[in-house]
Structure formats: C-alpha cells, structure tokens
Image: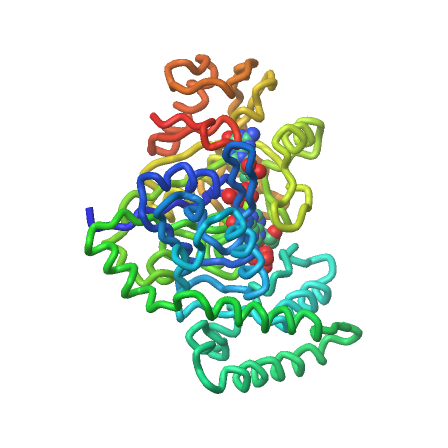
Amino acid sequence: MKKIDVVLGLQWGDEGKGKVVDVLTPNYTVVARFQGGPNAGHSLHFGDKSFVLRTVPSGIFRDGSINVIGNGVVVDPVSLTEELKNIAEQGIPVKEKMLISKKAHIILPTHRMLDAASEAAKGKSKIGSTLKGIGPTYMDKTGRNGLRFGDVLAEDFIDRYNKLKQKHVEMLSQYEGFEYDVTEYEKTWMEGIEYLRGFKFIDSEHVVNKFIDDDVPILAEGAQGSLLDVDFGTYPFVTSSNTVCAGVCTGLGVAPTKIGDVYGIFKAYCTRVGSGPFPTELFDETGKELGRIGHEFGAVTGRPRRCGWLDLVALKYAVMVDGVTQLIMMKSDVMNDFDTIKVATAYRVNGELVEHFPYEVTGNVEPVYTEFKGWKCDICKVRRYEDFPAEFKAYVEFIERETGVPVKIISVGPDRDETIVR
Ligand code: GDP
Ligand code: IMO
Ligand code: MG
C-alpha cells in the first residue's frame, strides 16, 4: 500500500472519531494526530472503562501501537502530562508508545489568557472557543514567534519562553479590565515540560514517511470537523487549523500522493458546540430529545451541544473537500424511537433553491427537508447490516446515493463492540 489512511470528522466535531480510531486500530500499527490540540475530546469506551483523550492519539490503548503527535498539533504540557499520567496508571507504557514531533508548537499559559481575553472582548459575537489557547498558539506559529518541542532541548529554552511570555503580557495589557494570574499555572506548566522531557522528541516527518515506505499500517486521526476548518468551515466560527484532509499533508509532512483511504465520520443527525451557523438546528422538543438521548454534552467543556437534523448539503461539501472514500455513520441508535426523521437536501437562500454550501451560512438559509419514516425499534444489538430494519437501510442507502460514497461502518452505541463493518 505505502499510504497513510485518514479518519476525520465531517461535521462540527464530536462525530465519534475517538471510538472509530479505537475500533480501527487493530488494523494499524501507528496512529498520528495531525492538527488541533486539547480543544479536542475523543471518548473511548471498552468493557467498564471510559476515557476522554485530548492530545494523545486514540490508538494508545491497543497493544503494540505507536502514537505520534505530529508537527501540526499544538500541545499544552499541562494537559498532555495529566493525560499521559492517567493512561500510565492503566499499565500502558506511554513512554514507549508515544512520540512527539519536535516541530509541534507549545501552548503557553499566556496563550490561554489571550484566548480568554479575546473571547471576552468579542462579547456577543464570541466564537465559543474551548479557551485552551488554540487560536493564539496558531497565531504565534504563523506569526513566526512560536515555541516548539524541539526548543525544549535548547539551553536557552527558559529565555525563549520568557521572551514570548513578555510579548503576551504586553498584548494582554491592551485588554482593558482583563485580570489574570498565571503564577500557579506556570509552575504546573514547567513541571509538565520536565515530565515530557522523558519522552522521545522526533523529526516526525522523517519517521512518518519511513513508516509509510516500510509499509507499516498508519492511520491519521483528525480532530474537530471539516465545518470547523479555518479555510472551509463556517468562518469566523471555526477553529484555527486545517481540519480537512489536506491538513494531514501539512500536519505530518506527507505528500498528497501518499494519502490512502479517507474515512469520513458523521453522526446520523448533527450537533455543534459553541457559536456559529447551523442551518438544521432544532429548537423544539425533537432537538432536546436528540441532546438527551445522545448525551450531547461537550467532552471537554461540558457545554450542551446544539442538535439538529442531518445536513446533506454540508455533508456533501465535506466529502468533496476531504476526498472521502468511505463513510462511517455514528449514533443512529439515538433516533430509535423517532416517528419521522428529516434530512436537509438543499437550502433556500433568499427564496432561491441552493444545493451547494454557500459562502455565508447566515440566518437567511432555510433547509429544505426530505422526510423518512423512523425504524421505531432498538438497533443497538444489530451486528450485521442485513439485520437492520428496512426503514434504517433506506436512510443509509439514501445517504450513499446522495454523497456517492459507501457507508462502510455503522456505529449503534458507544462501546467498541457496538459497531457494524459492512
Ligand atoms: P469525537 O470528538 O469525534 O471523538 O467524539 P466525542 O467523543 O466528543 O463525542 C462522541 C460521543 O458519542 C461520545 O460520548 C461517544 O462515547 C458517543 N458515541 C460514539 N458512537 C456512538 C454511537 O454509535 N451511539 C451512541 N449512542 N453514542 C456514541
Ligand atoms: P473534537 O476533536 C467540537 C469548537 C469550539 C468553538 C470553535 C473554536 O472533540 O471533535 P477553539 O477551542 O478551537 O478555539 O474553538 O470550535 N471546537 C470543537 N467542537 N469538537 C471539537 O473537537 C472542538 N474543538 C473546537 O466549541 O466553537
Ligand atoms: Mg469531541
């Protein structure tokens, strides 16, 4: 093969990437994160255990797996240390299984403060950021001021840290009335840096390309979702990285010709956490039901997720931009009791029918729905596609026809075992 396969979210994040990567890992030796940072929360459930991973790739719990934090990721030493220590407590040899790119940028305590100050200043038009310092860290990266993991090894690391911190302190002074104190957090941050020194810092582009050349099965794990991409998402209500498939090339240093299968994950409905446009959002009882049955609360912030019907206009757009080769549908079980299920197949914008995802998705975008009869039974125990009710198959096959991509995996519950591979 000599390719790298990709798993990514096609909506506004939280599609179930953590579960899918964990399910697919027996087929892969290496799992690599290519963008994002601790704004991600990827949930894994197996047996009686549950974990939420933030920066660590979701392959970490599988025996023999190697897990790479790529150059495109931004890393908070505090959050990563906490995560790794928790995983180590489970008897997982994290120091052997985890590799960190020297080119991955580091989130400073003051990056988090800048995130908070910027959001506060935006008032009502705030992004709804997870406030983990993601935006300011990527700004320093593109502004050519950032600190990278490779710098931790430099003798003058602390000087470089203080220089960047000082710049942030000056920036923060511009935000009138914004008060902060990073003294305590800074101590924990320094301890995190010391702990992480015990890990292997690698030239990840060389290592990843060697895996590919040696035909070692390797999977890239996306964070967030395509509609949160800084270029193609619902800007400015997006995250600060390229969450789409192209992000694998820049975030790991692999050529586009080396991309193999692209698994695009979507929920059988739609959710979004934070601000920004969401054409199929439901404000009624059905929306509340989706949230209640689907336990739709942010894995990182605990905020309730906004819920609505599946949006095929947006999904087709993501499939196009990502070059999805196989679809994975999650959480269909949440709609087991629904009489009717709706799917947006077009938008009406200022009275005109539009079938493509428009430049601006604002309040004047009205979804046009196709209705489906609900399957009205519990599908959680189904393990073979043939055993699904006809109404459910009609829903899946409609999505396949509309997108032109096969739905290869269907998830009917949070556990590893609640998965049907066709
Ligand atoms: P990620 O960020 O894409 O990894 O997704 P999250 O972990 O933030 O959110 C997905 C949530 O849905 C988690 O709580 C999962 O345990 C849960 N989940 C995943 N797949 C299914 C499914 O098929 N059915 C149900 N009911 N829950 C699921
Ligand atoms: P996973 O990987 C859902 C959202 C935030 C906010 C916007 C910008 O678990 O799917 P940021 O912290 O990046 O400045 O926030 O993006 N967001 C996510 N929403 N899932 C995520 O990650 C997200 N990461 C960021 O809510 O609207
Ligand atoms: Mg999540």
